Amino acid sequence: MATVNPTLIATVVVGSGGASSINFTSIPQTYTDLKLVASIRTTRTGSTQDAVALSINSGSTSEILLQTDGSSASSNTQGGYFGYVDTSSNTANTFGNLEIYFPNYTNTTTYKSFSVDGVEENNATQSYIMLTSGLYSSTSAITSITINGSGGNYVQYSTAYLYGIKNS
Amino acid sequence: MADVIEVNCETDEVTTRPQTAEEIAAAEAAAAQFIAEETARQAAEKAKADAKAAAIVKLTALGLTADEVAALTA
Image (cartoon, rainbow over the protein chains, first blue to last red):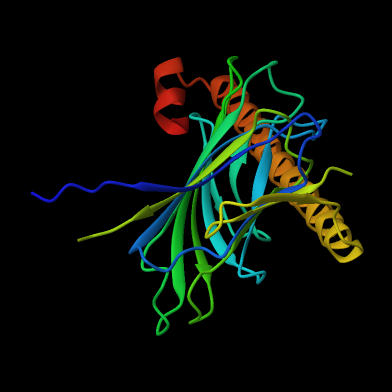
């Protein structure tokens, strides 16, 4: 059985000044799939949920999402954001976590679908998970990925790691 | 406004820069949309929960047992 070994392509650890967005550019075209793993808390106030807005090649994306807090679930299509993460209203020092998977990101013949799961963890009585299917409606290979908070900036110690995965 | 962090994945060079006016406008528009949609979603969830609670009260008043109400509303 083949072993899949993700290769770390790039790392971002947000510093004390925070970050409005994280942009991975000049992504190598030498892998089969990409995986972006992030641990994020934003400066948004007034709600325990923020979500990550995602842009591929500086273009727009669309999505269908399923979200649940464990007691009820709802589905929706909303405007370009993917996966819940924590905000300044969450318990101190808690961060949301997020994984985005981009299969076949180098192909130039089909649109690029991707999947996202994001968890807002509050170390309290309620937290949320959002599962999202996304589509970048372009046949261009993915060469850059930008993420930013929908309702606030990323705080210090937020991290984002981009991995390349080969299927051979 | 916090800076943009850019990573060149070929060179591993990390740069930070201020957001452009266009990026700020896009972020503000996206944030407004997100917050409006989240507010609407949460309001819809609350309305649904309130309606369910009211229905349970009415069913109980009609004489249904707690088990019967649970079977209908689970």
